[in-house]
Amino acid sequence: RPDTEEKDNMSIISKEEEFSDIEIKQFSKNRTFHKKHTNRKHD
Image 1 (cartoon, rainbow, N blue to C red):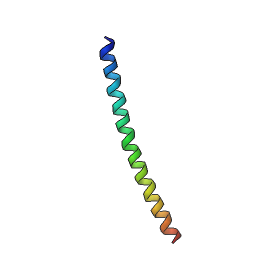
Image 2 (spheres, one colour):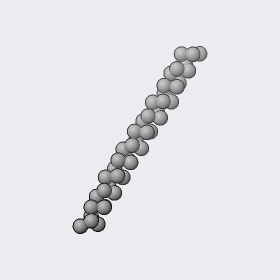
Image 3 (tube, rainbow, N blue to C red):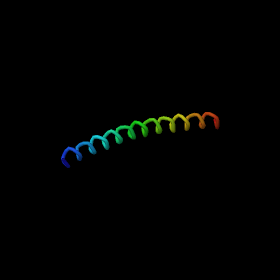
Image 4 (cartoon, rainbow, N blue to C red):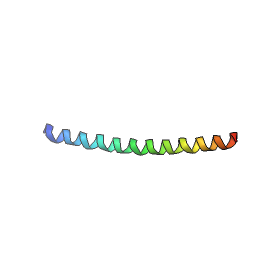
């Protein structure tokens, strides 16, 4: 049944989006940390 197939794809996509969102948050955290660290060196 195509209907259930679509639903499965939707859940897979939402899971991937959720994961990438977490990754992005982690990445931005690391970037701000890196910025502070380099700024301290320059001081």
